Image (cartoon, rainbow, N blue to C red; front, side):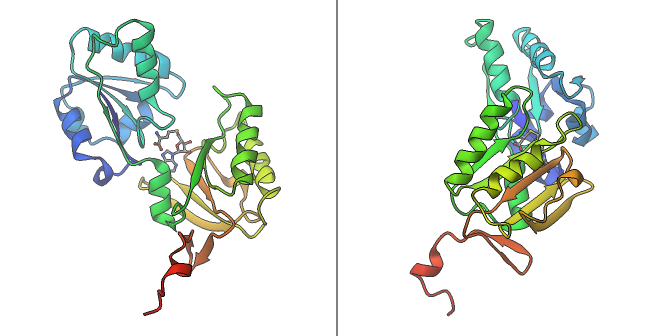
Length: 248
Ligand code: SAH
């Protein structure tokens, strides 16, 4: 099974994911995420945890455990199918010709972009595009192409994996590309550690984002041409205002 843990706080772990963890014999995950789990959920289980770039190794060990008949849960932060482990586990099972041998189930979780949107107000009320700025597995040229296309089409943008030591300039470059299509006053929400210890929520503008202060546990939401700030909240109107009288 592959389960999403949600953004971090146990209140946002789904009942299905909790039950899967309670029943599991083997729990596999990035060590930062294993730490977020209630230790009681992990008692008496085999825990396989590796560092940030150990995901192929981790998924391989999970597949081995599942093929050996052990009840195995691979955990991801947020949703397991959004820049996470579900796809990798499926690819590995396919590559090993083991798709039929394992009853793979994917349990959804609250993705960071939804957690961040909730903390910001309602920035995702209209069409949006999610773009990861990580070029570990995707060439940077393609990422730039997608930023240009999505910004040009007036999508609200969610920017994942905004910054790391190795690619310090990517967020600044992404914001410059967006500024070719949107004005400087476009609202931007910068949410770090949503629903985790150390949470921070900032509403600013495209001109106001300080890329050097953004870290990897952050997701940014850039408004579209109609997004506005309403008493500190970020609001992308769906269109009700033009169609209905909202005042009475
Ligand atoms: N599966 C996850 C995404 C994992 S990729 C999901 O569904 O959200 C890792 C990136 O997710 C981080 O670099 C960061 O951009 C974002 N992220 C994950 N958890 C977060 C949180 N609690 N607050 C803010 N951003 C988060």
